[in-house]
Image: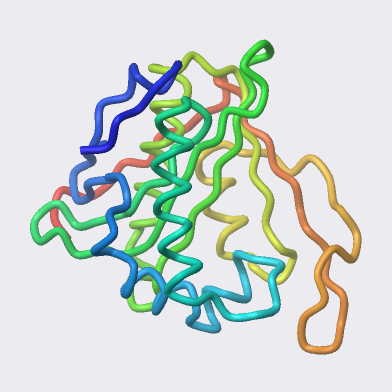
Length: 197
């Protein structure tokens, strides 16, 4: 089990939902993580990077995630099925401004797990912990403008569109904007997940 430090020491992993267990990444996850993140449907929507991620990159991501958790800075968690332990994707929470109770979240799923509510379930669990355990006041997120599904996910949880950063990403020969979202503790609408997969 990963050791969490600082304010994050209050968080007990795994985070459990009706269908999911959100746990720390382990070295054994690296091959699957590298395969998932390099899927063009995932890669395009979650990173501004242009080169593919290698297994060495992902191994460093796992090590860095564990270090950041131990320092109390960031939770980078694998989204897994409670019943089987199968890895579906990733969700994260970063404390960006402790004094003002401000955090940031991001998430992705392998395409074979889309359209089942897993992303909403995982993001909702992280927001719940951010507000109820870590006592944050605000969570932020950002989505590239070509990803309306992710925007709808955030809006279902109560996030509001707050701005747009113009032409931050070049993909397919054209520039794309990034849409910024914010969620206050009073606006949070937890996702009600079905009890079975």
